[in-house]
Image (tube, rainbow, N blue to C red; front, side, top):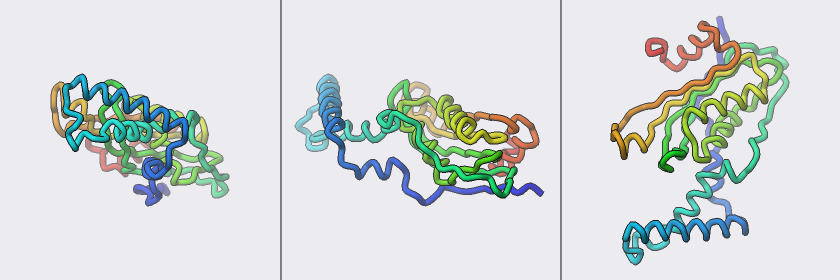
Length: 217
């Protein structure tokens, strides 16, 4: 019988949670001032009353939010992950499912959000389990499209771990679809990226079985 490890979201705080408590550096303070000026100009162009108490401080709040939401660009480098020798020679699936994430649509700069399901089959190295959500978080914290986000997470695992295979599935709702355009509330977009032995139908089927998707895929 296959020995598959299936995990839910880890309790460790996300990068976004930690960033929100950080004091901006001097350079970040300068960027916040410039962003706030431009946000204020947008409010003026929309002919909004900036004396409204609800709009007081809005440009600064938006600037701070953007620095947090786009932190994946500020870091300037991919995250360092902790790996360990696969001393047990474990060669079955390791899967972490239902990892929540938030990102910003690169086309309209409005949020898309949902859950990611990440799995790999180890070769010589295994990864610290808290690092799978961190990899997702790093690539999500930038203007993104869901297809690229899915591929970037899969590529990172393939390049850093060199596993026997990896698979990433992301399910997300896009506010650019729900709030504007076709305005289809609740529409779900699903993307996948497959590497290595997950090209095999039986291996992929095991992944989908643990997601309860065998009838849908």
